[in-house]
Length: 444
Image (tube, rainbow, N blue to C red; front, side, top):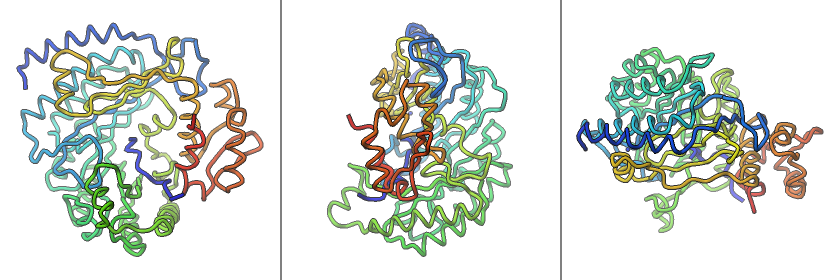
């Protein structure tokens, strides 16, 4: 086994205006035929086969454009340096068309969160971000509290200069892809920025008035030592962010890093070093008041990511854009919801939307066994763990009734703990081998 508990989840887009308007109308009609009966909430909120009470919705917007594609990245991104205004307008128009076509499936749900990810959504003009946010807010009713609106940004002079305008457009949470404060590490990672740009972006974010700031840190990078990671943690903590996401570098098939490693040309820390780094990250961040609430995420109390929690809690999310995934609400014909995937390639996404068609390439009505496994391993990623009573309310059986042998073996291995009530949570050792634990709950 290797320590995989901190792998990234970040879960894990020309035509005349008249043509675009026509496409929106045609597709909106198609969207109405897809059905709007689903009204489900998260786990434990109802019984399969019955109508569920109206709840909330989160909206994810994928913006695929990047200044450059990093050699370890396997996300659906395209290099766009600079981002041409015509392409930006075309992509935003397509997003608005998709929103108009899909909003009915989530009708009546209060807007809880918006997450603009990518890619680098901060490459969009603030006016484009404002267009998107205005349309999303108009599509869904307001809830009891203002929605969390997150924008991912990378440190650069261009993006930093836009921060005040992004905030004025309605962004209230900023996620900065700092990754490291070490120029050597950044260079080996193939990042477009250097350490001073990261520091400047953090200062600019505070100057722009962002009071909810998240930093991304990547570790186990080529040639990175534990001492170098300590220096990154020193700087991150000194900036006093409200949230930190940490990711151990993983080699994704087909990436330049994976090919280099296969040829023996990439020196990465060994498993013991990665495990030591994982423990050091947690120890330092928690000592600074940033509590681990999910395997890769730390926050000050009250600043846990609202949108990301929707994935861990399996709540409805409308995904817009190339490669975006949606989780439709539950309905009598789909008591555990429907998962939909959009075309990965930006060109294919745009072609579908502009032709008045859905960009969807797959749809899965979640089977009970699939939903049970996902409920287990996603809950185990969180600090709270898997609550047996909530699981039993949703599925009619406690976790032990389904996975008794696996639970016993994982407990014996020191990877899982079980309370008297049957609640399950990862042990400190289990967090190092979280993917190994997850496999025991999703295996057929």
